[in-house]
Amino acid sequence: MTRYFFTRLAGAVPTLFIIITLTFFLMRAAPGGPFDQEQALPPEIAANLESAYGLDQPVWVQYGHYLKSLLHGEFGPSFKYKDFTVTELIGQGFPITLQLGLMAMAVALLVGVPLGTFAALHHNSAADYATMSIAVVGIAIPSFVVLPFLGLLFGVYLHWLPVAGWEPGSIRHLVLPVLALALPPLAYVARLTRGSMLEVLRSHYIRTAFAKGLPLRTVIVRHALRPALTPVASYLVPAVASILTGSLVVETIAGLPGIGRYLVQGAINRDYTLVLGMVIIYSTLLIGMGLIVDLLYAWLDPRVRLAK
Amino acid sequence: MTGGFAGDAVRRLRANPAAVLALGVICAVVVATLLGPWLNPNNTETLDWLHVAARPGLQSAHWFGTDRLGRDLYARTLAGTRVSIAIGVVASILSILVGVSYGAVAGYVGGRTDHAMMRIIEILSGLPLIFFVIFLTVIFGRSESLLFISIGAVGWLTMARVVRGQTLSIRQQDYIAAAIASGASSGRIIAKHVVPNVIGPVVVYATLTVPQIILFESFLSFLGLGIQEPGASLGTLISEGVGEMEAAPWMLLVPGSFLAVLLLCLNIFGDGLRDALDVREG
Image (cartoon, rainbow over all chains, first blue to last red):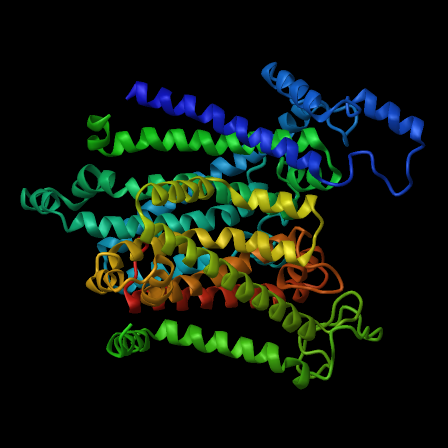
């Protein structure tokens, strides 16, 4: 198992390398540059700026320099936010994005799995239909509609929660954004759990467990839950992608100083290093989640463990 | 697909009131966006300076109110919905064409080609494509053709997978052996025998692709990367509405509700159709 994990870990490195290379050359192939302004800079200043950032060198040389600085753990200086390195910019915003994302993920799993189990146990009842209708709503309606609607209801009309803004350490400011981000993955998780739980509940060993006289709770928690969670585990990578994508808009709407805004802004400004830094962070998160999922499979399903 | 099969499917769909209702709402919205300009005395461009950011009301000249420039919100929302639906349908057709041919070829040819083609799909679906699309639209200008291509590029993966799965089982059928025996070329067999027999799942996933693409387009427009002024899709209207949500909440509520209801109904109908035709992702 450990060996399998390290093989996968080693496989992740070339993937990341390909993504970095692709992004680097795509960015450079784009028309325009980081120092384009309404008014063209005097050629001397432009030349000075370009040589200061190494942009006057051939792209291959720049690429080599960039990879070298990455190996030293440096994302390089930002082209737009002068006096800031990309490491500093991302370092400031990332904890907020991470907190938001982790909370959304936790809500999605901690509510989605019980909800799906509940629906499966009451198969074809009104409760089942109600739960699944809510799930359709969650899947269909995007977070950039849900969040402003929630803000309007709980912020503007009821004054229960702040509409937008951020105070360090304040949970109240995170409630609505977390809800909006968590809703789509929550709905998927509930659906997946319901589907697989229905199948598991039909299996012989569950019938045996009931026949032994075990209480419902024990049957579900000890016997049914683990195998039923396999589809949920394989959904975790898309869930991370969904939350990261959602955070791009949710952070802007809620006025949270996370890193979401840097991707689009950076690409518009041709802030090469900032965009690359963002792409690296996002890809690492997704690839990392993929590795965690591999471990989860082994934990959830003993057959995977034995096969490896 | 035989008549009996289609008949069964329609019967099963009819027995699902939510799906029927959803289909009704979708039809109503489509009709409204098409007939809207004739029924509404206001158009999308006129600036009504006497009613700037006016509240909605049935007595007022503007049923759903106006925006900061005095433009009629009802007319703009209908126009935006039309744009969103048009992009959803066109990009879906694109992704269906790509997905069906890709999946049919992979499934029919099989072997190493199939393996390689499916590996590509696996890699592509592992990537967060939305980031690449954001990237592409920002970098290579916000042209509408690029918008279609980039959105269409995302939608075809599931379709290809479904069609391949179906094709694998169709390939085992006797009529394919008969076609091969009578000397039909692979291209002809795929076009004449394989594709017509995967229509059912294709229709199901097409109805589920449309909302996915509408969502995707409105997301891009919300970020300011999609449809540009003076044109508007639901995404741009919602993004404008978010900025005004405390002073003029209808600017958010009207397009937001349109998008929410449209996506909800398309999803419910697609799910209903999937259950009626009993299709699973292969």
